[in-house]
Image (tube, rainbow, N blue to C red; front, top):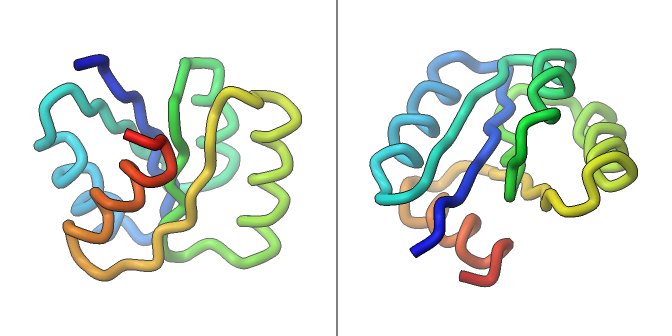
Length: 99
């Protein structure tokens, strides 16, 4: 099974911490966190399969960041995570990456 590299962006530190803990508990899933769009942009130089946008970002930030990723890192997919527990989180990753 190949490694899956994830970037989680959330300005809510508690949610960010929980998402990272859950994602990193999966075998071959490697999640890194950013608590701002600015930090996320600085981390995108690393290879990520998926960016998960979590709680605390405005819809304008979500939209502009999604466009930024599509234009500059077209191999990286973006998914907005609305909450709902670990089952939904894992399903969002699998569905977005078709795994």
